[in-house]
Length: 443
Image (tube, rainbow, N blue to C red):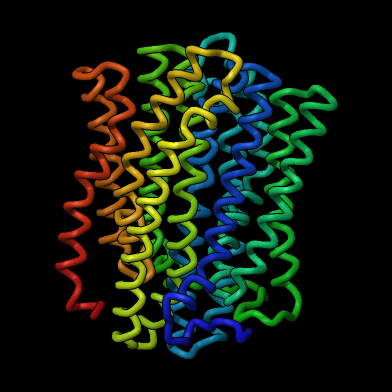
């Protein structure tokens, strides 16, 4: 079968062939993250599990630059390739990889002494603080590689190698699962074993593509000696500001969820939220993967000035996102009880709480695909401002207000309803921005 290229005309079949590897990649990434929680919850207990979920948002916050460089760089490199400038694209690529690793090293050094105070600030009690600090410091060792891993997930698609990106993710994921079993179940290392399993898998997910790009390959990109290009770095940050602010907002909101749940319920609430987030990410991973996979197509045809193809890809994408959202909602409603039981079946009350939370949360699957895709679409068009407005409004404004105010009206259920309120409110701004800019970009 002829490989799909960025310059092709995309039917539904070609669009799915090009994006499915990214979707599977994100699903698998989410699944091996779930395995960490599954092992810790069932073999180490709910207190270490709650500690993991309490500190993890802060660690994700430190890795946010990977999303910014990955999405923003992918948009700029794709546009540059569409303009017929492959040498410049490779120079930008090399600069971003070097910058991402250096940023990760700096953030790890800064974050190391802050973990104790951060854990307490997030609401950790004395029983959880040591676990939070231990888990966090092990993952900080791998932070530079984690940032590269995130970047390569995006950039391999731009290099027309989404299937290679999928294989790298599979290798890293299987390694994580095997190490989870060995370190937690066999050697009894508990949360420390989960941390090392995650850290080593992140390193492998970065080093494999790094070696691939260092040597001659059949992709559109290759690593060379980095050359300083302040304009390209600024444009990358500008393009990726949406993902940067979106992930900052998501991290802040996750911390706020945990704080509210500790206040209203205690560690059971944090544990339930952790399970919901693991499972939600598996469902949402399909939408995220589609956005990642389709973004380079948009960037390429925008750079090439091919408005008819841009319109074709956009309209087909909206239809696919709608279908995916309905399917995910139905599956979540049907599987909520058995999925909750897998994680916390040892505690009936916690299982009931988790099941109810997941069923409420899953209503948002009908909406969030449109909001997420629109933000990614504008990033791919190199319009970081609109993308940032959409993503920041959706998470930092709407969801923050909902998490703070709805519990006052509906109690604990108000915390679970917050995401539905946020996605509904954000959809109005998404629709208005798409209508406002449709003539400018021709989609």
